[in-house]
Length: 92
Image (cartoon, rainbow, N blue to C red; front, side, top):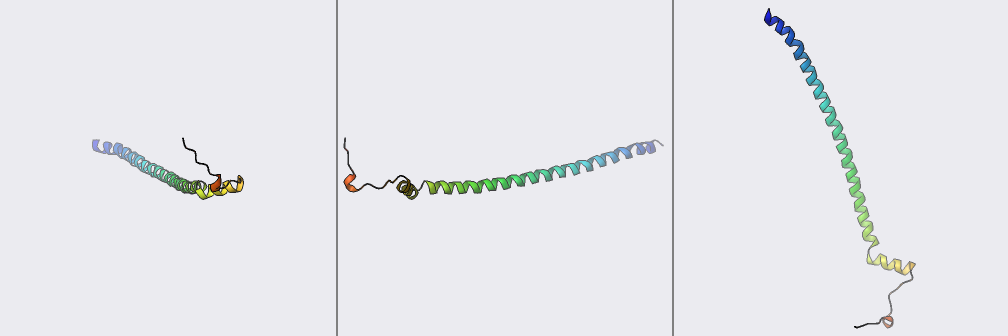
């Protein structure tokens, strides 16, 4: 009789434990999926920023090239290379 009362008491406790465990598994999987989605978004953002960084480096190298600077100096500022007669060498 005592073992039967113990079984009636243990069965609902075990049932609640199983349901709690199942709920915990569902919640942890949901959290894992949310974190994975966030990770993929961050990876996509990182890739886009790396591509933009590469474009900016190319643009910087184009703007700082000797030929570009010389072309801008000639076009906008009417600057040019001096003739050999205009060159003066100063010694100390």
